[in-house]
Image 1 (cartoon, rainbow over the protein chains, first blue to last red):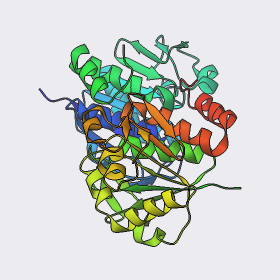
Image 2 (image 1 turned 45 degrees about the vertical axis):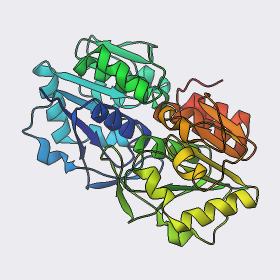
Image 3 (image 1 turned 135 degrees about the horizontal axis):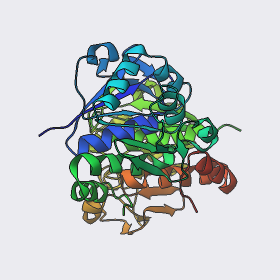
Length: 185
Length: 185
């Protein structure tokens, strides 16, 4: 059965994180939708111009196996301020489906919406003090039940492979890592 | 003094590699131009839509401190078939400036144009037998004088940090790695 994944992006999203997540999950066979919270074309945090597949408003009624947020500033703030994305994230948590965030987004988006309460989570080191309701962890990737968080661009590949493991199993994650010449446990 | 870097892209370029190179070099302060060998917007190897800054034809008379090729198929073949890029690469080698390639591109582009003759180089493992004039190496990143090659998406970050080290020094590469939460020697 195919897995549906939503990757929201915004002006100022960290491009390496966004593209790594999309690339790795598509390699695993996920049906990934890149959805912008602003216009279809966005300029990412280091100036890379990305074109989304859809606008977030057109994803409102879909059910996703995973909703996963890249970080970057001000990208994370722009994701936080999207009412459509907030609704999707709350529904994802309430209905017990997988969600994740990396870099600034665990603190700026998930924590802001109260979606980390009582969980273990990690984020970009300088944002760790903003994890008020969560138990801050120092690991590169933290899985707490249906919530997966990670630290930054340098951990984006591990984060994405962890998401593949959760959706498709350990063997598939190992295959993808090998095909990408990636170090992976 | 600012460093000018050219990152050519094509239909079917490996998006994680392209974006990692651009992101890391811009973090270091390089002036990076993403130049397409086809139209301004390209669809990369896993479907990510990237918009280039310029067309390769508009870069013909510029002098770059580094020309660096992402891989991916058929992206590497499309880079190989660009006469404008071939001229830029030959000039880069002839005039003793830095050039590099990752994944399929060391074999499909650099080897094809004879730019690896007598050098040590690496590439995506299944392309290693195509390195006829080069001495194939198993390392994740190989620096041979002004030519830098690397293996695949999982080595793109190490490759990019090595390019930062060559252009801006070891200290800058260490700073960028730390800011990206990247493992780096």
